[in-house]
Image (tube, rainbow, N blue to C red; front, side, top):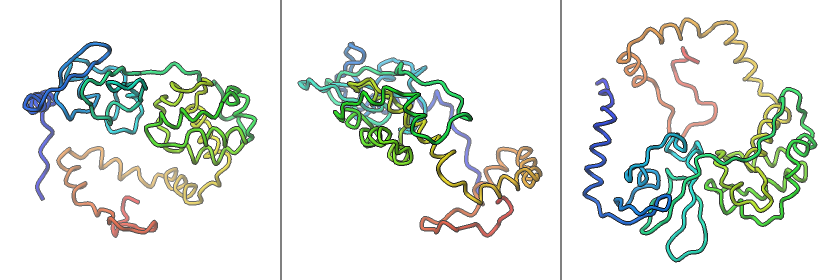
Amino acid sequence: MSVRKKNKNPAETMVKEEREASKAKLIPVHVMGKRYEVPEGLTLMKAMEYAGYKFIRGCGCRGGTCGACGTVYRRPGDYRLQVALACQKTIEPDMHIAQIPFFPANRARYEFADLTSAPEEVFRLYPELFRCVACNACTKACPQGIEVMDAVSALKQGNITEAAQLGFECIQCGLCTSRCFGELVQYHMFQLARRICGARIIPRAEHLAEMIKVIAEGRYEDILGKLKHMSEEELIKLYQKREGEPVIAGEDWRPKDKTYL
């Protein structure tokens, strides 16, 4: 089996992308109030980089999962402000863009080990929860499609489990909070709900305790030691030879070679 070639120099990749972008049709966009012309089809993030902006904050995974690139934009002729993740939204002609690399929302301080599963824990740490006016602006702002207002309602009713489930896909971008009339910090509330639910409410999985015991007994120390001393080429070969999980597989699927399980 052939060994995959090493990744190209990032600078070379950037030059190639710029050359390809130069062939595309240019459209006008306004970034932080200044007009630029950028190739159509780019994401907001790529368009800003093409215009010369260098991301230090406000950029992470570039895949829509880290929530670092919350952005506000407005289309021409539309009075409404829209929100999106810069790495996911495609630019449109004459769009006005302003990024929010960090939203200065309140985050309660607490010692998690001292918390219980009682709803009053959330009420005490986030009393602003009850300022919610049920306007649903938070839901409309969510790039993940989460029913944010429903999750807030579940917390107000003391149902931490339901709130944790409804807010499970939250990526902490803070765009819900940026549009909230009651100035709630929904994403921090959901994070707390998920933590309490996972540690205090959901029953502990039996296989997790078994796995912790196996690790503590040192079962994987020799295996990890060998992997650490392998070259990059050897690791690539080992990875490529592994038995992949079938596209359609049951929850009990296991590879034939159970050496690394």
